[in-house]
Each structure stands twice: as C-alpha cells, then as structure tokens.
Length: 242
Image (cartoon, rainbow, N blue to C red; front, side):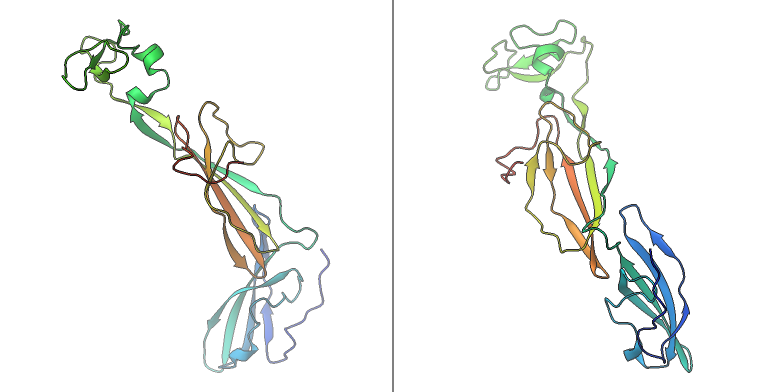
C-alpha cells in the first residue's frame, strides 16, 4: 500500500492534528479516524462526505463529529473503504443456530417408528388414536387422529419435540458498486463451502440483502433462515427457487 503525501484537503486553515490508526475488519472494510483543527464556526472547511483520506487514497469520509471550544474547533473524521485492486472483498460467514418445538405427531418418523399407524400402534409407546367425529378410540388409518400417548407407554406425557429452526446463516462483505436486492425466496442451501446442509426436506429462505454506504463503498450483509423439518412451503413463499 503506497502512502500519499499529506494533503489537508487543500486548505491551510484546516490543520491535521492526528492521523490515528487503521483497522481492517473481517469483511475487508478498512476504517480510520483523523483529527483536524479549524477556526471556530468555519464548518465549510470540514472535509466533505466522500473526500479522500489525507494519506490512504482508497479511504473516504464516512462520518464527521465536531468538538467545539473557544477559538478553535476539532473535527473527528471517520474514513472507510476497501482496497482498489478488486470490486468486492472475500465474504465471511457466521452461523447462528436456533431451535424450537413442534407437535410430536409432525415428527417425520411418527407414524413409522415412534407411534405407528392407528391400525398397528407401537406396543411400547402406546399411542391413542380417536375418531375426530365421535371421539371414540379408532384404528382407521384414513380418519383416526392422534390424541396422546397412554400413561402406561414409554412416551407418556410427550407432546412435542425439539427441532432445528430459526437457524441463521449470514454472509458479510464489502463492494464498490451499489448492490441489488431481491425478494424473499426459497433455496436448497445457502452459499459458502461450510454452509450447513441438513438434508431431508429442510430448505432455506434467502432474505433481502442489507447494505449501508461507508464512504463511497457498500458494506453488505445477507442472511438465510433455515426451515423446520417440513421445509418452507412454496405456496407461502412463492419466490423463484435457485
């Protein structure tokens, strides 16, 4: 990184007091703060939004804060940017797992292993099925509905189970051009080599991209939310599937 000669924004009345240090975050966004002194009230001397850093040409003004005192004011100028040799940085990813509960009868193995069908219930868990109209115990596979597990069964009192849901996978990066946002849509798997893949009917909702202008570059973030065991339904989320 070649340093530029000091240019105090072309005005001798704006004096650079400190150029501070530079920080690079995990998404590739560079930030730094310079402190300038200038005559009280002469706010027109403050570096403009988007103006270049006095030493590092790819950093530009992102935010300014003024501290007033008699005769001389200070302005703390925050700069942000990314290196010039690429259009966007390498993304970083963050995994935030989550869980929830579902009714036990929604378990994918409920009618095959856990409880068995009404006509052949599991003798160990002892599920009770009832006719939805009469309320009587029923063995009709076509109409009977699960009521509960018998008190003498091994799953007595069990009504729900913990499932993987509300899990979020987030991509963060920086780019030079303004990003385009798309509507929510269902995808099979989020991007990234280490993205989780739960198989089965699990899928993901691709949420709209978020971004903020930092200097003259865009700090971007996009998240994907994992479904429950049955997946996100395309009737509810009809966006184009990748």
